[in-house]
Image (cartoon, rainbow, N blue to C red; front, side, top):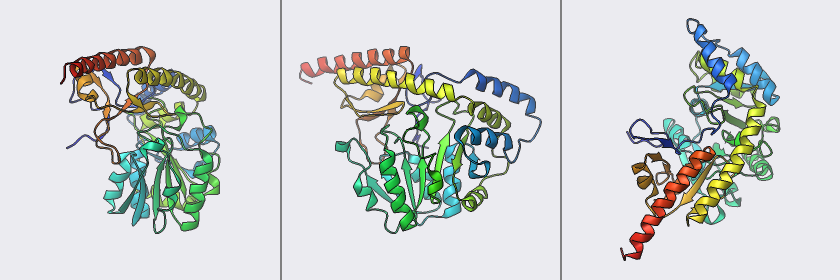
Length: 352
């Protein structure tokens, strides 16, 4: 089986993992404590309605409980959405998260891949709007993965208006939005678009990928019921429910993270540019870069894992994604990349 995501630490000897984009500040203390106390509930079934979790998250994002749906990570929600709605024709801008293509294959949807332009920093453009005729569903990521590029709300509104008029369901993946601040989120406006499903996850921002917890928000309650029917009963464990309740109270931690990641992203970006590597503009906790140096293999020899993006549709060999980590780790990465760049400069100077 080909590994198509980052984080493959189980088949490599890794001391620093830059391939997964989790919070460099780690897991909040309150969330760790909630997981410890959840051990006492292991002998019970979890709340099948996730009532406490719904209440906590609804309060945090100012949304009614009955407009929320929780899943075992965002990936489970994506799969439930396509099984519930059975889109015949789906539009996916690329490069983007492979999970959208994965779930579309599960229901044998026809996929129209709209290729974003590298010369435009892989930003969404007017051309995407012209691909929506005859489509049932659009998957759109903000900020995008693997580019980290944010799309402003003005464009998102226009996109949603076009989709609403054409009868296209929109799955808006905002899993990395908390790293960027909420200025471009559609959480405050989702009620204007009954065709909109916003999906978020606790995985990255709270650094708990092992817990598996995501949620969807939608103003169409019948849509929520339909999608919910595609989910297993008791799909949210007692650990995930308790952790999610604690996460919902950590607004200050999210703001602190966004500030920290912003500073470290600049440090990492400037450092890589100074080494002659092309770095694409990012607003998230990761960077898309391009170099002809075989950076993945060279860093792997040094115990550092990055994401090789050659298997992203719309990219090619030479593209890599690098997570923004803490200051110490980022400096270590830059030091190792510098050694590799020097090695290849010397190699080239000898006529090879």
